[in-house]
Length: 495
Image (cartoon, rainbow, N blue to C red):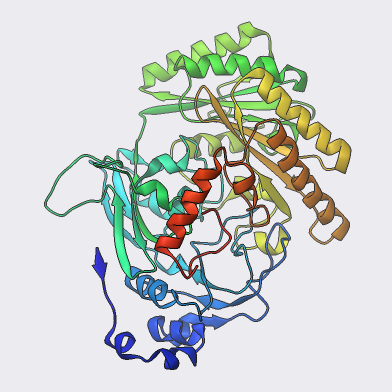
């Protein structure tokens, strides 16, 4: 732990501080060229959420600058700070804070890969490190990154901190340790962290109470770096493609769950409804599942044969294919190749598949895109997934909005559903319908017992509404009061 205060800060009279704005104070820390007033806010966002009023954006370059900013802004007379990494929180608010009046802390300039150990299976990353940047460093090694299906140019750390889902497992499971700037002026490291000259296994929990989870989906501090686990790279990998009719969803879910529970599948099995399956080349009216198998070449050949035989024998699927990625003349070769590469930790730097799905580049998505995300957890059973499908049909009947849905099987018991609501951002009536559909999704899924695991900036109140124990929420608020009594960090978010 380090506690550093500048001499200027220590001798400055409180009255002098009150005469300066937050941006002026920030400029003294990072330089005037790294501070931009933003009277019109942060600009458009892909979800057409109301643009919050922000005083400006500050772009620090080091953890020490972040520490000093967090300490200085822990003052009732200054605006709070809202930190983001690369700003790719699309569908949930992008770069926007939850409330008006913050100073935005853009951490994209903290972009160092501080340390990398492929033998030990870890890397220390700052928030500005993107998926493609780390993957390029890992190319040719025995380790790989747990990629997401989002843009290759999104933050590894930012997505993990908001519990994003990767293609191999949920991203929060990749976190081994965190470096955090606290309002009291400390820069602390929680969980596992590499210590020079001391070799030890990566174990996030340590001794005593584990503090790492306190800073996931949290506004208790600002994360300046993370120790991230790297996965062993498989010798071989294949993704099996399964097309099926919508009415078979419950049976298909039960069949695939049996494969997952018996260890036939690796990584996250993905099940797409008709709207989501289109981007992957499925015929109109059919749904799609991707089942990944990996291991040695012989085991992959054996598992592929077993899964395809099981699928064919079930009679549930219209098409079963394990060769799309290897058949250059096939109609789905290109998309299948990118899917398999992503499971293998190799991102598409050109974002071909990402742009196919979103209709815009990562750089232009907030300006040109129009979509919202709803992200509930559903038990991995046929009846529960069929019930979730019924709720989507009810929302469509009530609002006229057809949602895309990708069910990500995190294990044999839990599915994380990524529900996408697309709209024409230039059509105000369509925007209003989309937001009304999102409100209904929250209501209907909560009533069914399917709670979201991530929240957008206009539904943060659901953290209280869905809490299984109000006492736990009260404890979180006491921790916030203890660590951040001046509400200097992201008021209105999860904690």
